[in-house]
Length: 307
Image (cartoon, one colour):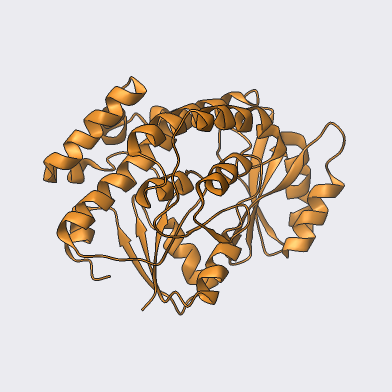
């Protein structure tokens, strides 16, 4: 039966993540130590103890999530004989997917996403950008609303097509707030999100440049399993295409609903979300409820895993 792995992105982090994996496995402890050395700070302490303000800083969140997902994957591979046919990650999670499929080394990826997170945070002055979730309008309606409130000097565009009627928008704060107000008038749910920057929109162009420069110095290989990438929702394996996808996704929307629809077309009948939380399996439940869903981010979940 065809199976797929999923790796979470920002929003899944929580204080204490990875601690039981760290306590359980010397291999994981070595991985955490490697990450701490690579980024020049104690990601371990931030993951385990916070404070929340430190964990939610984008330059910390991104390497911390990658670290905890790969730590869980290492324990899974040690304790279970798993195989999979496709893999995908939500935004930052696509980098984790690259590590999981051998397209990139853990050592290179952890440093790269640290730079990525810092560049994304610095791309827009704090307070100028915003994101919001719109629930209950069609993709076309949300896209039209965004376009009508954007202009030469104002950005507003869809950032995540998450499925189940949820679309996240991103851009200049005043434009996003205006779209939220109009969406509410149309009886949709519209919620401003507590994020530190407007991700996956054209305001992130300087961060995309940083990612491009970073990737130019990192070896990348063909992936062992196809990665269904955010920017096109199509499976790819070639190293050059993988690099281009990682650059483009900084300013492009995450096509998550389309990604899961690609899973359906590929006859995937079981997905495993590896890492902290269950955001992605929750989205899969809305998009393709017929798929069997598993989560593996803790020792308890891994011990009872049947995938």
